[in-house]
Picture 1 (tube, helix red, strand yellow):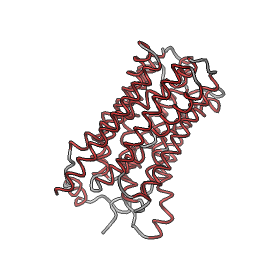
Picture 2 (picture 1 turned 180 degrees about the vertical axis):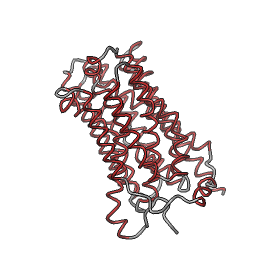
Picture 3 (picture 1 turned 90 degrees about the vertical axis):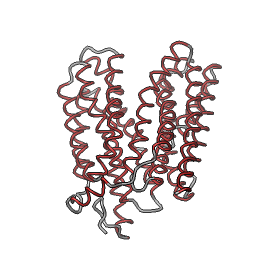
Picture 4 (picture 1 turned 135 degrees about the horizontal axis):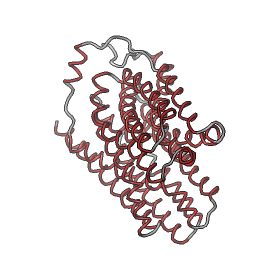
Length: 405
């Protein structure tokens, strides 16, 4: 039987080519995620280039997440009909055109927002396609680690955005950062392997005949990831300003945020490796990580209220590292329960995550403005705890439905 993603599952392939596939998935995910991070990192330079307020830049970035949310579910269907390899060949090329357009054409916030909207769609399409790509081509027994490393590409994109400031924005100008990202996207498209054979009509009919997905469990899981991302994205948006608010210097506050971000990368990768050894109960582990993250937010709130730097550091590392370190494990767990429909299933859960990423900074920011930073962190702790409940409920339903079939 031929491999639908264009690679025969031979021992040689499994041992030597998985690394290349993983590099491709990481690069594609990074390049699809980088537009919003670049706008955030280069906000000062962009505002100096043309008249735009902070609120208008915020709206422009929101359009990116809106595009990703609207295309999340359809992208899963498209990936399973076209194949993950074909979509991954296409999305970096489209992304490169959009990044180049931002570099060359952006002259107002609304034009920037107009270009960021399809960038978000590219991000959603890349996410589901790369999930399908790795699910079909990955070696059994190694996929937890694979998805953990792949999902670490998102904070890696944030790191690239930060490095773009001293490397390019302060020397050549912010537009060069987007231009370089456009070139890297082209390189990524070239690295994506070619499908081994043309897409046949029979394969297309098979895609349309895929089994239906049980909506209630997947909706609960999507709610869980949405609430978890709500907490993490809101905390990430205001962590530096919150630590500065208690008298910590900007440089130290930046180091605290970097430490928390590094912890997220380490936990995502580590949790994937541990999942391969454990073999089951992934959703229970995710719920435990979310509850530990909630404790981190509480520590952050107490440290903020008392002005204790150590509690702030511990709270930030635990909340962001553990409380947002489950993303790769979550995708792996969803795919493990939906082997026939990995792209569609993760597309549905991705919708929850994208909405959480949109709403988190806005609502937690409003809470901070009207009450305090401590109140904002406590709100994040509450939603993170609710996320654990939703994940456990969705997992329980999946197990229950599987037992009755």
